[in-house]
Image (tube, rainbow, N blue to C red; front, side, top):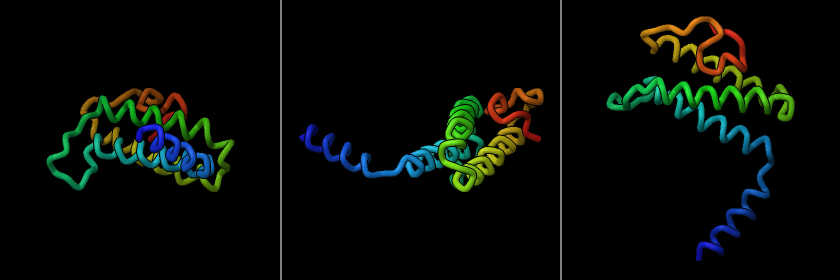
Length: 112
């Protein structure tokens, strides 16, 4: 059965445009980073800035690398979301990173 499921998944993903896959992955990274920064609706969700940093770095790398391929129409909202989560990280952090050293800033430049 796993071969059948695997084959079906391969066929399904082959029909999805790259821009849609990139956007979907970016939104998942953004959502996970938001939760780790304490922006979840669930008051019991733990803030984990180490995990948030990893997710934001991955998101920044993806958005930066994909932007020329997906065009500004698709990249602009991803950049906005990335900047928002970078600022949320700064607010949640008790020890601020130096300018240009925050999560994702090696890809985006300093965020303030």
